[in-house]
Image 1 (cartoon, rainbow, N blue to C red):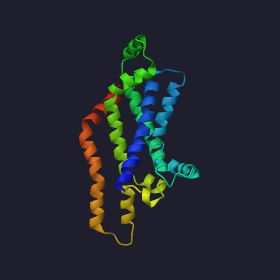
Image 2 (image 1 turned 180 degrees about the vertical axis):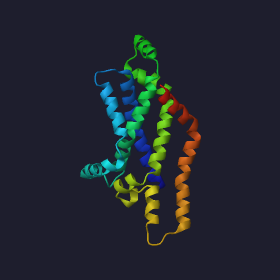
Image 3 (image 1 turned 30 degrees about the vertical axis):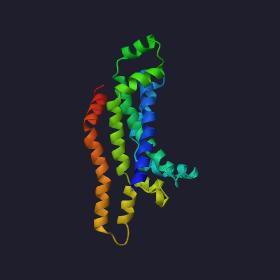
Image 4 (image 1 turned 60 degrees about the horizontal axis):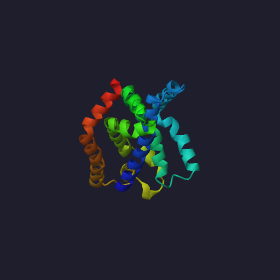
Length: 207
């Protein structure tokens, strides 16, 4: 179950980073007519409560027979985490001077090269913030894992602890040990990257 949690967290965060960094850079630096409306839609998606979309999402994912694999939970976590990550990355990229982009274009770089060689290295604090916040959220989640991981072999650590506590007899020492093991990774990740979290959130809010 610990291995399952690591796979799901890693896969979900990878998808979130791919979509949010590309979308954030595009919304911040590639101006087009629908940019304000698209950004407003992303902000609106952040306000949609999970419980209002959990049932239709479950029905749609079940139609593709993804409930017996990791992909059902991974896609759900990615869909839930991408709006906030995109908002944060957009706010950060807007703080990057347009002169850097213009000078890079004058030097012959394309937008994709600017994104890879300039924008991504400068946005590492924001990326670290997204990784840590999403890791804690996904690692500690119970509802999505319980619904979208139907196979017992694919259960995450949190879902396994929930199933253990729901039995007729609960072994308190085993449950406490499992809870400790479940909490340690999130605590370690936060302690290691707490400075990057503060820097990323401050840059995103201030700019």
